[in-house]
Length: 90
Image 1: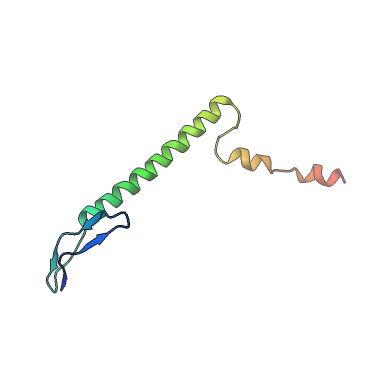
Image 2: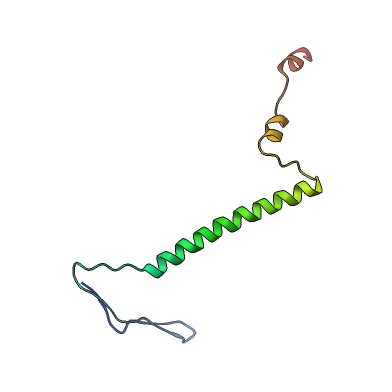
């Protein structure tokens, strides 16, 4: 059994926080549906917002031609060294 009655907290500023009374009988389930839905919604919106922001920044950098953003090809090409030229130069 879970029960709480007249549960209160007073912040140092003097503002009280009052929780509603709660009673869950033994064998019952306490599921905070609102909190779970809000957490899921915020997680999805955060991931979607981050994805859109990253795409916007990539689009802006490509429009300025200040950074070639085309996936992994420029990164792999930047570190590619022709072994024959490297060996013949020494």
